[in-house]
Image (tube, rainbow, N blue to C red; front, top):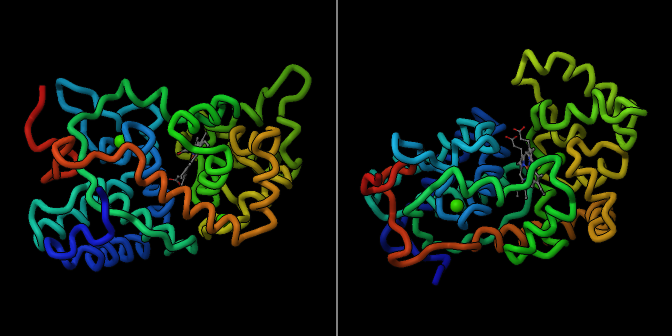
Length: 307
Ligand code: HEM
Ligand SMILES: [Ca+2]
Ligand SMILES: [Ca+2]
């Protein structure tokens, strides 16, 4: 049901407004690119790409964004959606869904960071629910086993190759020390540090994260070589023992994923193309149309107060 020109008549300036909003956010806060990409991923994995992750909790219901795994999603990612929505409500009130805004903003951020330009189909409706309890089973954690990560993606119809390509999103952005500190300090009885890290990399991480228990903001670049460029360096890093998270390193180790790591490490074009196809597919997963959803007036609240 989605089309690329869904808002052609109802909101002709949509693409311009998104481009202006995203560009100015990217200039002032480049980290918003990674934050928004992760926000989009966390939305699409839970009930599809329906802006359910944007809803704020109320006294009756705890929403998805208050789930532990979503707490680190940066305010600037939510903010850019609010800014775009505010501008769009002036230009074409009540027309453009928050789910479509998030999908478009993500696309623009990815291309601004040097990633592929891909097509975003439009016409998603916004969810009528958002519940904290739906999150845990649907979003992988850094220490989720590779078999379980594969299973999570397969349950949403993604192939192993698509999962590996999407994980290339970790070519930008950062992770907080608490997500990988167990690989540095007290890893096992025989070795305090995960031996799959390159020793110089783990030494640098230990210094960076030495105080992480007192300073919970401490974070490392997911891709220390080109942290803000959307390229295939992430896969090259994995092969050098520079996979930050256990789930990153797991892609190199697992027999069903390792040859995709090799492919993308050696072939930037293959990564670019496969990432584009996979995120196009992600952006269509579980979408709501017609009366399955609504066009929210504010992205953080349902149009009708629900108890
Ligand atoms: C395959 C399983 C995955 C796991 C286990 C995983 C886990 C994580 C974790 C633990 C972080 C650090 C969060 C923090 O400390 O703030 C992170 C960051 C990030 N993830 Fe993933 N992720 C996965 C796949 C993906 C996918 C498929 C995408 C997007 C298509 C994605 C996009 C990102 C981005 C962009 C960041 C950086 C966020 C920022 O800088 O604000 N991840 N991920
Ligand atoms: Ca969702
Ligand atoms: Ca990079």
